[in-house]
Length: 493
Image 1: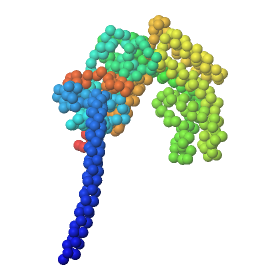
Image 2: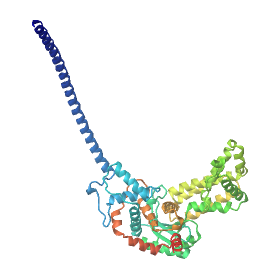
Image 3: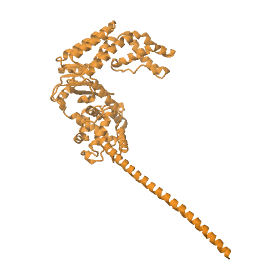
């Protein structure tokens, strides 16, 4: 019995010892837990401070983005437009993007705005559809077009006129106004002109051109100081009969003078046919990568210099061509004397055009252009000398039209060609559509310009001033029935 008691006492003592050891371990672990708890709390506090700092930075960045990208989440930054669902800033952004990005159609602009809204969290609840944006463009263009050109009220201005050929029965006649005095050393840009008249008809002659010039005078308030156009016979006749001082577009005129001298030459005719033939024949063959540049069918002498440059490149690198390629382009070597001759002519002309389009016409500048021509055209061939005489005579004639030594006038109608081209690129791809109310994009393009910056156009006023019925009435009074409409009437009936 005593032995059992002793054993129990020993077991009790062992258990007490084990308990003390476990208590020490527990105390040690509790100390570690407390340390880890303190460390966790410190890290949590540090994280909270960093999150607060990040939140402040994010908030600050968002505020900057709102200011930079004209965020409309603050109603004080918007102006409501009567009868319209969207504020002026949305209209301004979408319309100006349409004008500045020529490859960006109405649907793409709508998609772009939707993307920016999501990316920058602009807070827009609705995105305008393509049809709404198109209507804003037409309304803005309509109101800009019908406003009196205040900039010419007390200033002398020049008019730039041209006719744009369209498929079928429609031809557009466009008149642009520009300040008569050329004040900078840069070529005219879209923002430098004002659209004075847009007219559409099945055909144009000198009488109808004169009628439209009279409409232009009424809108501007007085006659232009001079007019610029190409050498189209009906335009030149109308300008003469109106008694305008006529400045012939320098690019068209120089190309025409060269064409008159070279177009009937047997070697030039043969060279042109061979150049055209190789483009057709080799277009899907291995040597297609060496084909000459595309040539215009109308006014082809206007960009003949690119073909001449190509010919000179082929001649210089002829030894690098394979036997097959040498056979295809061997005619360049045969006609190289002609190429060399035309190379000198077009190098000279391109240099003069570059200067004149930037600097314009003054008596002193024209004298410099004449001197450059005389010094550059050194080829002794009869045709080059004829070109030299013709170009100098043309410039001397234009020089006599300037009233005094200080006067500087514009001498190029490239800007009207640029507006025509921009309109044709943007309009509906179906050529049967002809000229639609979307032609009102032309005055809008000239108002917006083409620099990547916001304009001062008051879109709120434009949209509130124009109704859709105004566009319909203008369409009926100005435009003609196009081929697409005639097609629908015949095939659907």
